[in-house]
Structure formats: C-alpha cells, structure tokens
Length: 245
Image 1 (cartoon, one colour):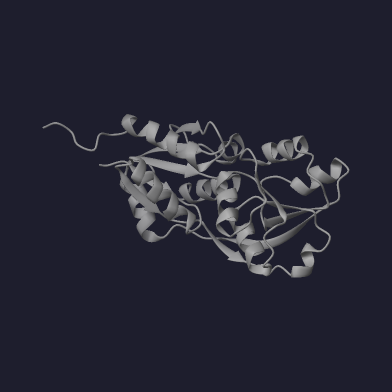
Image 2: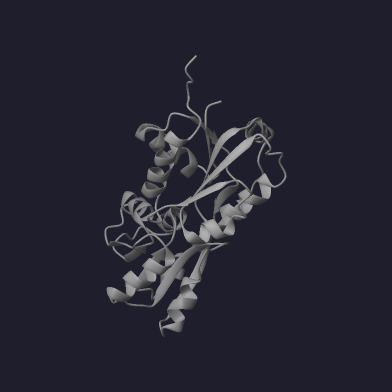
C-alpha cells in the first residue's frame, strides 16, 4: 500500500500545501481532510485608529485587514514567510517578516524597536498570548478577533482510508490542530496503520498525544518550507511504492 499524507489544515491552505509538496516530489497518496473551517469576521475601520503597528499571525488576519481598509502603507509585522507573502499579495508594502513563531516574532519586533500602540489581528484560538507579552514589556497593545476556527470532524471516507492501514504521515501545523487530530485518531482502529507525525514546532508536537509506536519529527524552522523538507526526507523510509516481484 502506498504511503498516505494526511493534511488537516483549513482550506485553501491544505490543498495549496499539498500541491506544493507534490511538485517538490511527494509521490504517495494525499488525503485532504480539514479539521477546522475559517470564518472571517468583520473588522471595523475604527479599530485601526491610533494603531502604529499591526501584527498578523496568519494569512486569515491579513485577509480580514485587507477587507476592512484600503490603506496599504501601515507597518505590519507578519509571524513568518507565509503570512508575509499573503500580506504582500494583498498590496501591503511595509511588511516585516519575523522568524516563524510567537517567540521569534516578539524577539524580532524588540530588536527592530517596533513602535506601539500595537494591534494583533487574531483568531478565536491562539497558540501564544502576544498581546499579554507586549503589555508585560510596558507596551500599549490590544487584540481584535477577526476570524473564527470552527471545528470539523473527519468524514467517513477519511476514516476508512486511515483505518485501511499502511504508512500515514500526519502534518501537524499548530497545537490546536494537533489536539483535534489526536482526538479524531483516538476514535479509530489503527491496528493496521503506522503513524508518522511531522510537527511544525515543539508546542505543536507536545499538543499531540503521540500513540504508541508512532514516530515524530519536528521541523527545523516553524514554516511550511521546513515542513515540506521533513516530509520529503521521511518519504524514502516509508513502504516502497513498488516492490520487486
């Protein structure tokens, strides 16, 4: 049986990552089964009044900002390359790209002497309290919830493929997605399945209760490019696509 890559990110990010990975050399099956749906919430233009620096920790925050205002010259800090690319694609010109996670973001902003007041455009669920960290440093900072992450369940087809067995590579892109995936897999009979988990960060790895016998690797950097590298490095170790007769 060919190895299968399980992608549980929200769409369209899941399919976009899958297409990039396929182009980079993934030759196994690919199962796109999002465990979250993103719902953008309106951002009042007045929410931007007095803000010196905007913070986006996902492309969804960037999208909400782009819908709320025609202004494109404000200072915008993006958590990593993916969010920065989304901001530039929306026409924002003053984009600062941080190192990929909340810790790197706070460090890079401090090193650059970013000026407040700060506004974090965030979802209902966050992996780190960026506003709290900035406030603890004496900064004027607040957050606006501009999107919701609605929970989804694995569908019948996804469950059937997972339980069919063989090598299953699970890409874990956040602590919350790790918890959701762990909860879904706990409901299934995995006796025939060999799990291989690839996590974007230590926090994402810790959030997933690794089943006995599963392997786990953590990306060298908390970004999609490093996730791709780890998945492609794992591929030769999986069950061969073709066995000699």
